[in-house]
Length: 305
Ligand SMILES: Cc1cc2nc3c(=O)[nH]c(=O)nc-3n(C[C@H](O)[C@H](O)[C@H](O)COP(=O)(O)OP(=O)(O)OC[C@H]3O[C@@H](n4cnc5c(N)ncnc54)[C@H](O)[C@@H]3O)c2cc1C
Image (cartoon, rainbow, N blue to C red; front, side, top):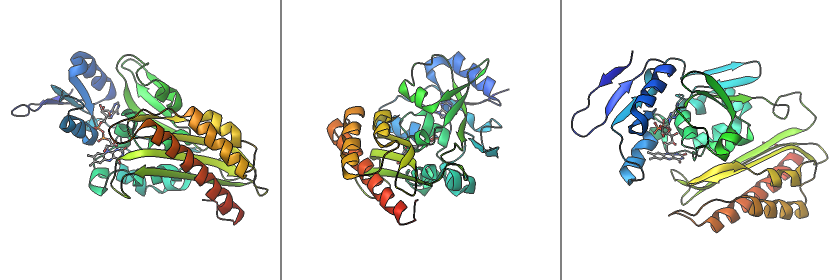
């Protein structure tokens, strides 16, 4: 049974459901005036900036057992949405198998923010900086939709986060060690990079974020190539056309020009108050080409990561 806490003044009422089904029932009952809250760090910035109104009711998810914690079994990791970014950074299983996610999280906010902010809030926002890393690691999202559970590829959900109608509570983020990531997979070494571009070096909102991942063989051929871009208010996306340019190819100057052109053609971020769409596209294309050049060179020197 949920507990209701009445806050004084103009503050919203806070409900604390005890399980996912109850959280969904509350959301259904309150409609748009009831908002799921985890760490509350993004919501707070939205209220302060005026980009979202403070709702009448907060549905605080933090008392729901099972939404926190990281489970590892049989080559996969299920990350609870209430896992704090700081905990994710410290988890060895994440750093070892999904290093781009660990790096992306390390670049979000500052320690005080990461101690409150959750990975679920970052994902559910559809614009969080962890998303490009999760995209190249081919994450799946587990949802509770009231009566049943559902699994969606992150890429499909991001293609249209509003498409799935009705009440949806994120209950897990599943990452599988695919062939490309598992030790003992096809020959070659895994190479990958995550980059965040902002207006200053640290503690900065992103303008552009990119992630790239692949397997580099000894002769310099890339396979299992994955690329994604996002940043700012842009909903991140996999860059499927750009991936095909490097799949089975070597990182030559000509290939890098074609990758860059493919990113420019495929990536369509919007402008916002911090940067124009053209700047974001160009920066994403340049960052991706530069990272592949660096990774191919590092791979040849025997230092793939
Ligand atoms: C100073 C500061 C700096 C920041 N810097 C960055 C940054 O560099 N990069 C970045 O990406 N973000 C940044 N943020 C935003 C924010 O901290 C992160 O996105 C964070 O991960 C959000 O998590 P949260 O738990 O606080 O989400 P909340 O604010 O609680 O929720 C965010 C959204 O997700 C929804 N939600 C939360 N959990 C669930 C769930 N389980 N199921 C369904 N919906 C859910 C909420 O309804 C809300 O719409 C910053 C915030 C602050 C205050």
